[in-house]
Image 1 (cartoon, rainbow, N blue to C red):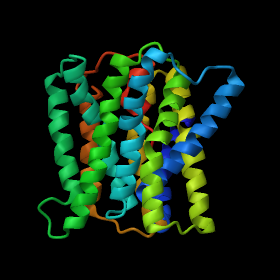
Image 2: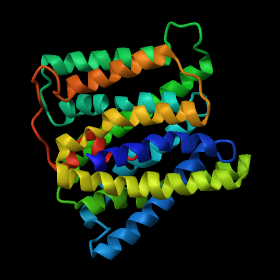
Image 3: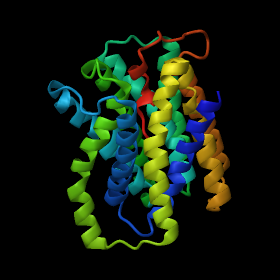
Length: 303
């Protein structure tokens, strides 16, 4: 279990590290830099292990699409969204990833959803709405846009799960972790350069440290530890990390950045966690069949 807590701690801090960088770099650059640093760490570690990073040529196209769903798009959306909402709120909304994964899997992989899982999806949508403050007076247009951006990132992460299971069979864990990040570097290079030239970069020691920690630790080491958890603990146990990330993200956002605490945020977060438990079959005995290591939604999600 220590491994799970370590991954949750690393990924829970990622939202704060993104927030710190936003004062000095545009979202596409933050996304690009974390892909570069994360890929560098993974390539070095994979090289030492003697494994291959580059997958078979027939899978390159699928790797590029996975790079979009699991790296380039969600990295950028989360960074953009955090310009308008707190890092704590972003960490809670990101917990909707397995809900999106279950919905996409039911379509792409013909996985039948049982009544408790359908109820979980509906409960998850309700939880996101509560956290976002829909219907509340404190919801400004800008915070709605930020909320929708992070929810869209969670949907993108969720799509990566069934896509990888359907089209990227046979790839090693190292290839699944490193190859999409390498592709994401190329995808994000032009947007990062354009936005950096337009808005400028304003590095400070704190922002540079946040960039290094997010890329090397949050993306590179976090991915590696998560895939090792899958191999050692199995996908079902490894997926418990989903329940812990929002707790870390909310705690550090409030204590380190002084972000406001909201009872609505707490209620919505609990609702989302309960919905994930329903969808994953952890309540009422409706457990989903165990999947292969690469088939669990949270296990492909780099925060």
